[in-house]
Image (cartoon, rainbow, N blue to C red; front, side, top):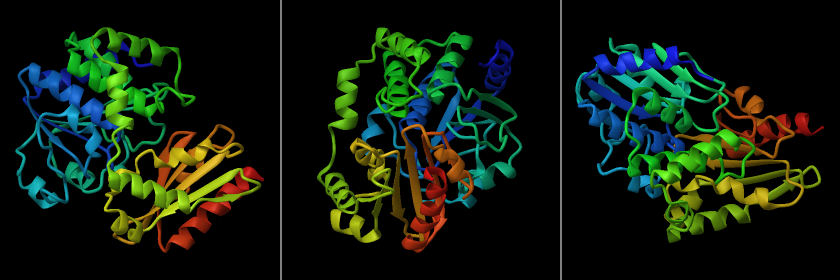
Length: 333
């Protein structure tokens, strides 16, 4: 757990900063988006000039958390534009839900050349110590729990919209409270957020009963690729560039699709391989507990949690699949 001193140091950075840049890891998930939305509202309420930046496109189902169009690095502006002050000069950069350079493509380069301070809010074990001050609590089920603790330390008001954003962050990072990181602390915090106005039923419908036809077609393609190995203990699925072209879906539409094959009895480890336009292969791994998939991903420069992790591998697809197969084989043997 973090101490009062830790939060005092973080809040001191916030107090002296007037212009703040807020960002998160590439391929932002619910925890990342929820934390950004909550912090942006609170910081603007303190009179701060806050700019948000995504490092890749946000899944459209998180769009309701924001009332602004957030620029995307690499699409709306280049790293050179950011260095040149396209968004302004910032006293403080706040990075949520990651502390790793490889999760911040382009932005990590920008950080090295700037003079302002950096505040990191994260709950992952892997990290590169990017912050001048770091609020890192690896026991937290989501970064949103740390953000809420920061709210309490600062005395910031938890509005209904903040409660919604933080509830989304926690619910998505716990698989709607199915994952083993769901503990008593998590549920107590969510009870607080419900009391502040978060409505679980309506939020669930926005997040999980709102598939576009294209995303549904993409999921169908993924399910058709299913392979089972080691007597059904290892489930493998993949998506190619052709699958995206045929379905009309985007890369962001892959979020949480890996969870589908975990419904199969006997599956202990699940993998989803996604072919990227730059030739690399994005690999997401899930475990039901016996296998630490973070250890596997770390061997390839990735990271995450014991039961949910990811990494990038060099193509082609078959080569990437074999590399992970060999490591999973070692674990299941």
